[in-house]
Length: 353
Image (cartoon, rainbow, N blue to C red; front, side):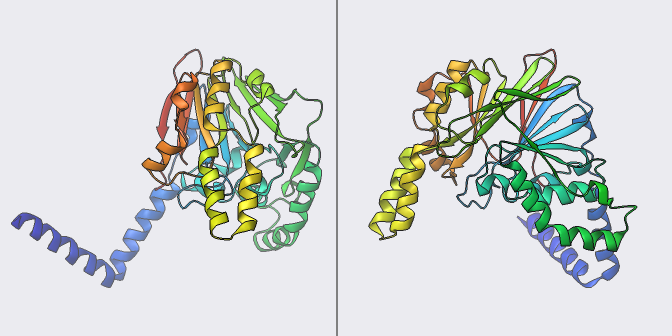
């Protein structure tokens, strides 16, 4: 006990000294800056593997620990993003991801929580030195989305070019370019070992609504986007290593609706009622994974986002009865590595500093 007291006194004295001594403050700040800037994620782009990270796992429901829907896929010397939910860029930046290596963004549909940070991803990767215009893939109508963001950021681009110079922030690569997708299912990119396929899902009345499959060598992963239980998604997910599937706990949303009605919040109750007809329950997602023979199902775009272990248990109720091989509940920073010529699925959490 005496040693603990002495240790606490020493720590307190050191903290007080740091607060008073500018030289020590500067040394501490320099050390922190160096450690942050020296973060090395180059191995993500050198591994002969298909890697993915959950950079956002919530839905439009606010969550203090979860960003809006976003999955990052690393393959070859680039990474790709499926949907750009609010605060998702922050999740990537805090983990030291090299923004200039962003190879494209794939939008599943045009709800606000899936397109919120298009401008930020474009600006950050441009400022980091991206060497070509950023392509934004999506269904018909993506041209309007991209044009709107380009227009909204026009003043920002101009200010930054004037301030830093056109040699550093190149005007010719500043704007995003729309890449509309039609005639689904369709291979929309082939680059070395990487093949990306878009397919339709059922998010009626939202149209278009897409999912994406990424095949790299002999490994594969699928991102569902928002959908009800969908045969087209099951077909596209056949024998995939990992399926990132949206999940809405309908029994929990029912409770939210009942509570909103009891409190006289009829506008909110109406929304809770309506959203139940175009999302997939955790059990249904597990059934789809079982039918497709997916090795691991990852539930993301969580509605409502469970804030603790008890809520997670409620969210996942009866999922184990659906017959899926393996089911994980996503959290921000959840990272998967799928080495080529292997059946292993490596899972870890990359924490923000």
